[in-house]
Image (tube, rainbow, N blue to C red; front, top):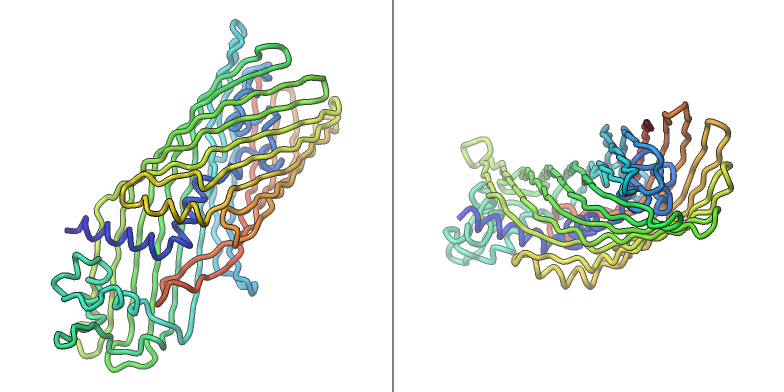
Length: 465
């Protein structure tokens, strides 16, 4: 019975919030790589036709053929995610410290097939939103409408939310009319809503490549991708006009975690000394998800002897699967000897090519086809060398998978210092993008629009031996 409750909840949640969190999450899973090691961040991700980065190897494994020594590298990052409303107020701010990238390159001088292993944090999920409203609508209106007069004994089969609103005494049932009603005005409610999300997407990549000639290199890799997010929601309502019900609180927690697999093939070509041309193709990632959920409702009514009645719901582990879109990458790099370089990169990701596989989620494919657009990522970056010090920076334009949210820009900058066989990196990267969140509300239509600024300060070291 509980499993049927959760399946009902999950499908209801996807239906009601498909224009927000679930569609956002689907688009996030299929989005091109945003951040990586320190050099990658400083170049704003423009490294398809460059070597010298563990993250770049994950994007284009062919560049491993350019390494002349064995290498070990590691980077650490401090992430900051800040959400601001359209009027400039801060909705939430969160910070996180993690390992941005780590890996090694092992050369094989006998046959020319070099091998690498790289770990990379692809994306960081961070969101803290506080949204308060006065004289609005209650979420109970939605649950009453969904119940549609279903007798109380059959509410568990209809869905856990509808059953819990009755079990917590938030509403009463009129057996004569067959209707549910709340002893308060559901359209004059003051709401306090807090949403907190945390998690990340990372990958472990094993690859190999070699130079077929002194000018043409090829490579391939396989990646295990892991994604995990935990969401906590607290929704509090106080009723301005009431005959009995004074307050209602809903607390919810859920966790999505998945393991996926993907592959990458690429080439690197230098027709003349100062020109580099490269391309890579990443096949779709296949994800298998586990999802867990729990929630509680609390209603405060002076007429009931207990100081608040609480109903709790727990979902069994729910499993589902999906596929992201493929990604096509290309880059051109111009070198000015040892003085520096300029590189231009392009990535295409047809987001709507992704699919939901599980039976209960397949109906979302039609929505994905109609609402999601391909992502185009184009950028440029450069490096200037002054002896042992190298300055670098870049900028990337990224179109949004949801056109109504607008495009965004990624910026990066940093420097490195080389000492013998060791190079130290420091960089800063930032992406500013428009987002939206559909708070629990009476009609699920009024989105909270805000701007998210995701920044990363990273430092790393590379050892050659």
